[in-house]
Length: 134
Image (cartoon, rainbow, N blue to C red):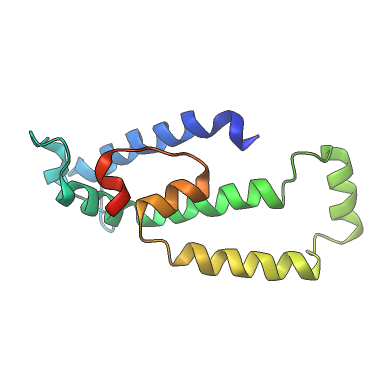
C-alpha cells in the first residue's frame, strides 16, 4: 500500500531530484539548477524553496497522480484477482463516476503550485518552517 512506502519513496525522489538539478551533464530540457548545489547558511532559503519546486513541479504532479491512482483505482481493500475480474468484465473501461472523479483529480493536480498542497495530496507532511508559505 502507499501508506507503507510513502516516506521512503518520498525521500528517494527528493534525493534523486537533487542530482538532476545540479548535474550539468543532464541534457536539456531537464531543469538544471546548478546553483542549488551550494548550501546557504540560513535555516530557510526562499529562493531555494521556490526554485526547487519550480524544477520539480512535473515530478510532483506525477507523484500526486500516482498516489491518487493507487488509492482510488488500485483499491487496496479488494483482492487483486477480484480486481482483475472487474477489469476484464468491463474491458478495462472505468465506470462513469470513476471517469468524472479522475478528470476532476487531474484538473486539481494540474494546478499544483505549493508545497503544502503537494504534501497533503501525497499524505506526507514535511514541515520546514518556510514550506507553509510556499
